[in-house]
Image (tube, rainbow, N blue to C red):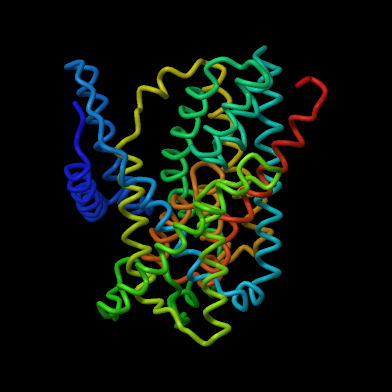
Length: 400
């Protein structure tokens, strides 16, 4: 049974409303800061799974809107990226990027060690490492083709999709509980100061806040987003097949950064309230649609060695956040939010990281620094670093 594009959009909206209600009604979800799209989307995915098992009817939601929503979200990240602000957060950005890069390396090391220990192809260790967990569905699909065509790994695409699906689910679920654990480790003075912060909020910090904007500003912002989508698509096509090849969403984000800062040079100001409104709507709809379209039976089809690798990667992510990221980033509230974000980045995707941060800051207070550095780190720098690290691991002797 295939649900059409308009009915899918209606279902996605209802899923978001369901998620909001579930978080309001169920204390556990609220206590552990589970994002509303994750709560609602997983309920629908589970219902689809039960329907498939009991009636042998597979419900498929149309995916037409999913990629445009994702690209629109990344374009708003670019349109919000001011180089002057990134310069101000430079030292923290570099430190966090170093931590993210360290996790990418460890994910592949752990994947390889377990692959050897379990007696399976070492490529499966890389596939169950940074390729799919930090890379997500897009990077996983791209590299799985390489693994099949150049290295002869069968069913690489199916395994990649399963691993990325696992990461998307766990990345959205792990961030809140881990943040709750770390909140107990920050000082009482730090907790008090969080509630007293009066910093100017950034685009994605308050998704539920009313945004003062106008129809003209919305239309202008939509035009800018369209330019980002078109420019990013052209750029992605131009660099496809070269050493500089990057996913389309990274090219869209880069186009947004260039456009935003070029307009700033000629003193043309982008209405950030309109960017916030459209960006948060696109993010919420994309996440809800992605989660409710999850084929959970693909996880059940993963072989035991892959499941063992994924469980180990989940434990690694939690331990790395608690014992490495949290102390290195300062053992404060911003460090807590960054750890929750890293769960999204390291196991799911940048949208998952943003949703994790929003769920926490909506409850405890703003984290200006986290929202300044995480979107650009996860959506731009991390993909470049990940591509370099994957290529370096593939040069190891046992892959030849």
